[in-house]
Length: 208
Ligand code: ADP
Image 1 (cartoon, protein in one colour):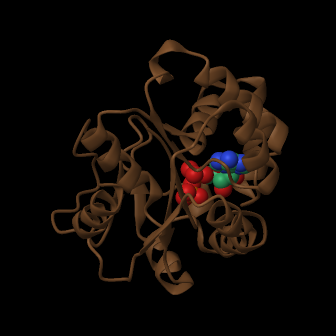
Image 2: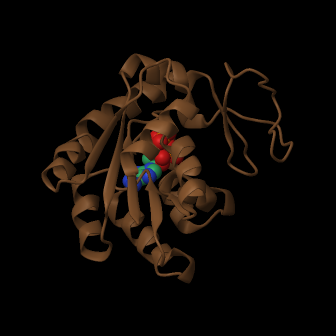
């Protein structure tokens, strides 16, 4: 099964993709994580992507599409996967249709106010990529998986967050209609109080 997780920045795509990926026993591919990997390794793609990411803009389609295509060609991606954060523009979605058959698109619908709150409290592990929120019970400044000191992503700073939300509405939200027309859209309403467990249960039910 090939799934897409679609939603605004901070909608919980990454968290839910990880949970559903474990449940279905298929890998997740996050274009955001891949791009941050390139930045850490200092590749040419990382250098080009960094200025866009730090400004809260999207990385140009051709760079992201060729990075994804290369990754999908590897053998571990042949038996189903979850795409987290891709596609993010109509052009990416149209290109994706030429090389991967998608079964369902899980759209996590979150009000903008909740997004700002979520991203202000988001902390990530710079070493293993795990994500936390400062409001979680038991929150510690160190990663619970590998112990590294957690950081706030550069693009989670408040001024950049507002820009990312506006980019989402302009460039990514049109995909909701695109996939609705294809009959693949599953919308999950995530109100501010929905715990990650509750949202996962809704997604599992929708997929069964
Ligand atoms: P979030 O879901 O919180 O926005 P991501 O880790 O998915 O975070 O993405 C971080 C940044 O990486 C985006 O703001 C964008 O600049 C870049 N990026 C990730 N995926 C794509 C994509 N499919 N197309 C263009 N840019 C992307």
